[in-house]
Image (cartoon, rainbow, N blue to C red):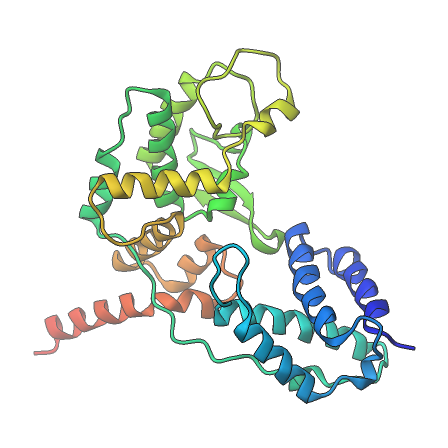
Length: 307
């Protein structure tokens, strides 16, 4: 019997070993497909899966309430479940298991995405609100400058270690989504801010950014250092705190600074392929959310030169 449970376990092993996906990707597959297994029935044979089951599962997802936010799942999150299910069905059909064809699992249409970014004047206001006389202020200022000058994802920033960053060359390598490596560059301002923060540190911990104050000067202890590594949530709180202090009404997150990074590059004439590489996007389609920026720039060129 080709039960869902049997092939689900095999699929997770395949994703981890043969596809060499990251622990986070594996965790997501497990979460999304476990939810489908609960709906469909873990012991049911996959040959019983029909299109009506997919439709009913989509309906359940559309009405499902997130336990943390108490809101219904967004279209994008619903689609993540369906993408995982398609990958699973593709895997089992390759092993000659009789089941629903993966291409019959259709995704919901997502409304055209717009990005929120900060104007130069707003960025300056945020940077100016930071009190850099204290080490916590120097840390926060370095975080803000790093996010804006590199376009790093917040998780990528949080995973950085001191030895990873070359302050003289103002560059470093990171492993982003899908464990793909890319080179990241810093501005002089960001490198200087980071150096000033690190010069005030009297610890030997590995993480680039620590929670709390200076810490005690002790021998290198990786485990202790990891406990003090600044969390993603903490970085998010830091960014939103200074945005509020600067009087910016719109919601500002680390990703807003990433959008601002891409916007600045494109406005100054960078080509979209280079921006794609610097952002670490696997597909140019993802980077094309910024085309509204280049489109407005093209309009300015047209109005200036077509007379």
